[in-house]
Image 1 (cartoon, rainbow, N blue to C red):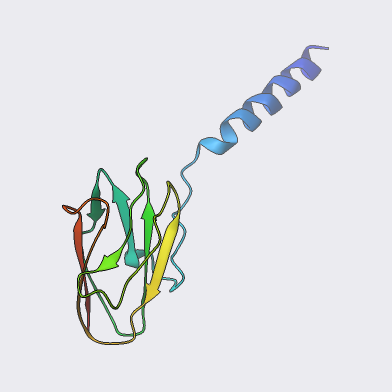
Image 2: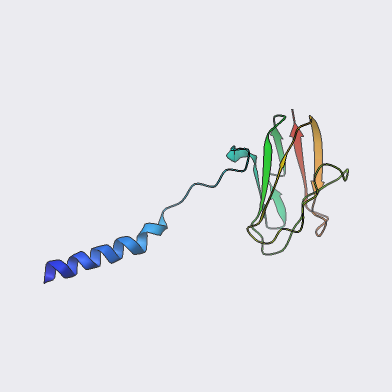
Length: 115
């Protein structure tokens, strides 16, 4: 009887703590984790990223507030308002420097440099 109870306790313990391990972050559409920009604490992190032409950058909103990603020039990037845990991805097919901001929070700025 004690063996059965001990086995049940072990199984319950294993199930409860199986989800406590850290899982790797999901890669953006381009498959490169370093091309992910996290939106948190009303800022883009990293605020500047350098990539190669043809790579994809993914933004993920970790804030409770909604945010957007819009080009300073108004042509390259134009996301909808992203709610918590929503993402926006863009593939950069041209070289250059692409400044962007959040339309809701003007102080939030970032830059993608495409080589």
